[in-house]
Image (tube, rainbow, N blue to C red; front, side):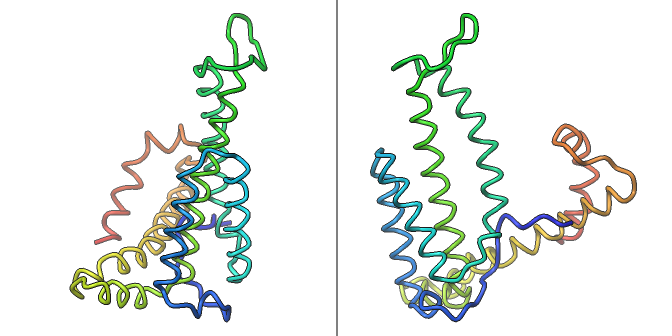
Length: 203
């Protein structure tokens, strides 16, 4: 079964948010980003994330598109919990492993980082799924950017999911030929067998 893409194309739905002017969607993105990065209050961060998810539901987005992001952040969470609780020597010790202490302060910092990163990524994905690339180009033109430059970002965003699908198909083809690529430790030494056909397909 092919995994869901990390980036997704514009997905039209007959929703009030899809019918909004792209500048309004950009304003939503910027305001929420300011809120998320201007506070360290976990309640505010959690409330902002809930508001983002409610907006996605109102825009009738397919939340399965967010699953790869959530999985990646879970791996990041494990790493952050170990690092922050081990080296943030502030607050109470919530767990002790021999001479090593794990501190509660690290848990709070980890929660803040994850909520901010998750909110930022969801906002970005929402904006991509709500805004047609041509609307994005016209918005940049209205802001005074020359048309040939205004087209660059929308075209790049449009091709990222296509390139990701190509990369996934290369992985599947190489695995069908007997190349073991199930884990990260198997993929890194065999990158040459992936990157060469990928570069050829990109060209």
